[in-house]
Length: 470
Image 1 (cartoon, rainbow, N blue to C red):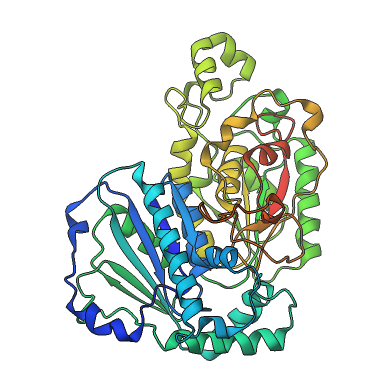
Image 2: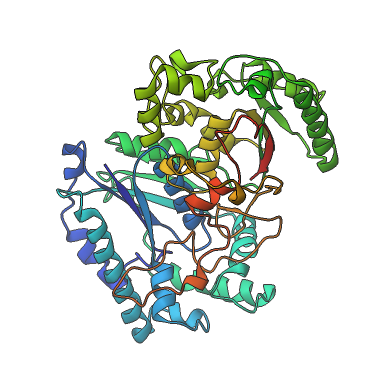
């Protein structure tokens, strides 16, 4: 099963003169008869309503839980077709030349969607996500936070951007038609998000994917917050090279816990919540902070089954076939009587969901747990855990500081503490037949699977601690 999203930046609105034709069309709700078909998630709403933000967050989540998803953003197609944006006049409904360009971009995007989904074959289900906002303060804050750094406004002049974008919104209002849950659109499957999550209207959710979409969108918020991922201090099992178990901190592990306390005090985060697993090495690390903390069983390290408390050398000698199988496909391999990384991702889903709802959180966890969380937050393929093997030691950056924060233009993490404009939304460039995107325009925060694994040797018992901020 796969899904795709069309974030059309309101270009999906039809002209007012076609309203009568729309009312005469016969709706088709055949999606209710399919249980395993690809899903097109159509994002609709006026500009500055958070559609791009929601689509990127939702895409990252769906990919993480194993549903292949790709964003097709009409704004990117339009920027490829019209290299130089001049003013809001381009979006006037009576600008015939511009309307032709925008319609052509929409057709190209739909063809690309069809190509993307044709691999699956069969019919396609459609689920609408409409973002509605009538709070002028929220709209203004969104414009200043996001649109000022948009590639449409390279001059970054706040007053000019605000004035032009508000006029662009007025242009869209002329033709924008919201979903009608009481009459015309009552048979469609959709969720309407009002005022960035203050209220929701859910209509005819008909399958598993649609229910997961609703579940996720009802949990995310747009407020800025920091998420710190920290591995526990070195444990006695780490010193011995053993995996799993429930050992206590080593002397070096206690030193790390003290250093973590100094780190937290230095940053002076307000209302910081601390989460740990139920294993002693994370609890002892949190105890040194001198603050309240919550224990989560689902944050426990991956269960190695019969291999618990063994070294990798012992596993290779005792279970050579199992060791070879794990080396071939680490993500799907399940320890006898234990878990796979795929199992761990499913177990961690409630934590990821709760992190979306919270403010500042420090998660003290384990190497496999931290790896799965980083994959979700860095927008990587979950199977990137397979790329760690046979990495030359000279490519591992032992002393690099990993500090990350959410970028204002997209929900991706950036590799430093400075907000930078994104030239494209999370690396999803327009597909052919539009001109290819220069490699130099790839977003700075996007990391490859290869680069993620170069930062830490996740299978080395000696690489015992680290703190990553998102």
